[in-house]
Image (cartoon, rainbow, N blue to C red; front, side, top):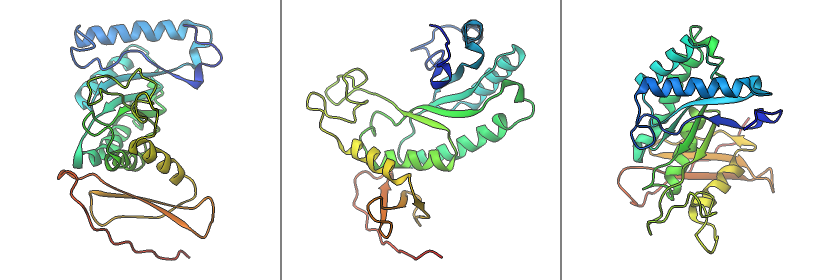
Length: 250
């Protein structure tokens, strides 16, 4: 791979989920040393100075591991452009991603001590669990937590389908489409309507912590408000009655 002039348009993830034995069988220090070898090689290539490198891409938030990793980076002159991990929380715990993001940003990204690492962004480069990968409410809960926690980027994780086959390599956008037919699933429509909600946002809130809401002006008519609601509680598919209150802005 050559870190050419286009290197700033993508991110190098040097290793996937090194915190467990499934993807990494060496010691933690051996991973840190491997990360440095890869980092130094990328930086040495043409355009490598401007390449974007992320890590440690753990399978979940582990602040003790991240702390040790960043201390190693600091001691070994590693420029870490993006701090990353994967997040597979379920149910009501999805909301905790917000505080995780804010804690990591305050403790390390905004820290004068770790400023030499030049961390510019936080990425959740895999999100949603296998059991909730198709659940619209859980997907919206992740988007809400990502926004409130001020994440800079996030990617959908791919998993096995109920049939046992993986949607990582079957051209279904990580399961957003039905295999073979490519018809959009509920999850696809969730992504679509969330995307539409990101433009011309208006303020919205919910009184229940397990309800998330996104409100925006309609692209078809600026006099029309689009409201997107999602439920991500722990009691399964129990129907919820929701009362909407709309107020005119100033």
